[in-house]
Amino acid sequence: MDKQLLSRTAAAMVAKGKGILAADESSGTCEKRFQSIGAECTGESRRVYRGLLFGTPGVEQFVSGVILFDETARQKANDGAPFPEYLARKGIIPGIKVDKGTVDIPFSAGEKVTDGLDGLQKRMKEYFDMGCRFAKWRAVITIGEGIPTHTCLYANAHALARYAAICQEASIVPMIEPEVLLEGSHTAERSEAVHEETLRATYAAMAAYRVSIEHLILKTSMVVSGKACPRQANVDEVAERTVRVLKRTVPAAQPGVVFLSGGQSDEAATAHLNAMASTKGLPWPLTFSYSRALQNPALKTWKGQAANIAAAQKAFYHRAHMNGLACQGKWKPELERQAA
Image (cartoon, one colour):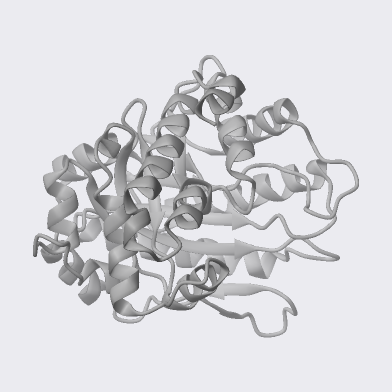
C-alpha cells in the first residue's frame, strides 16, 4: 500500500473544477444506448465511441479521471496506445470498474447485492500494472414497501468495504458507489432517510475492515424524489437534503465526494450539483462522476457516423465544461441557452 500514491491520486480525482467521466458501461448497456441512435454495437464501434470521448480536445480541463470497462481498458486508441496510457498522457487518471453486477439476496425479495469479490486481489494487481489508479464498485439500494432491509444494507456495505480494502492494498484508490435508486413513488423525505441509513452502514463497514478514509472517494446518489412521486423536490430542496445527509455521515477526512446522475436529465444533474457545491463550509469538495448526463448529447450527435465525430466532441466538451463550472458553484442556466 503506497499511501503517497493513493493520496496524490485521490486529490487529483477531485481537483478544483474537474470531475470524472463514467465510461464503464457494460457491452449490454452499450447495445441499448447504441440501438437508441441506430448504431451497430460491436467491440470496434465501442472502441471508436470511447475514443471519441477521450480524444475530445481540451476536455482534460474539466475531466480528472475516466472509469473504464474491462474491455475498454484492454483496447487501444487510434495512435496505438492502450487507453489507460492514452488517458494518462492527457493528464486524465485511468480508473476501472471491477464489480460484476448484482445478484438476488436470498430471502429478500426485490433486493440485490453486488458480485465480484472472488479473485479480486489478483485482478487488482493486473489493473495496477495496466495503469489504472482508481477503481469503482456499485451497490444498488431500492426503496419500496418494507425495503431496504437491514440485510440488504449490511450485505452491500460489507461488500463495498472488502472491495475498498483490497483496492488500497494494491495502491488503487477505491471509489465506493452505494446508489439509492430513484425508481419508485417515494418522497424526498423517505429518500433522505434511506440515504442516511445506507451511508451509516457503509462507513461502519469501512471502519470494521480498516479502510483508510483519507484514501477513499464516495460516489453517491442525490436525495431526489422517486421518479413516480407526485411532488418532485426542487433544486434547492435536493441540495439541502443531500448536503445534510453527507454532513451527518461522511467523515471530514475523506478527500472528496462525487455524484452520479442516476437517470436525471443532463441539465437537472448540473443544476443540482451547482446548488450543492455552492454550500459554504463543506469539509470536502463535491464534484461529478456522470455517465449519461455527460454523454447523452455526444451520443445523439454521433449516431455511429465518423462524419459526426467533431460535432459530438463539441457536445461532450460543452457538458463537461458546464459541470466543471457547477462543481465550483459557478454554473448558470443562461450558459446553456447561450450554447444552444
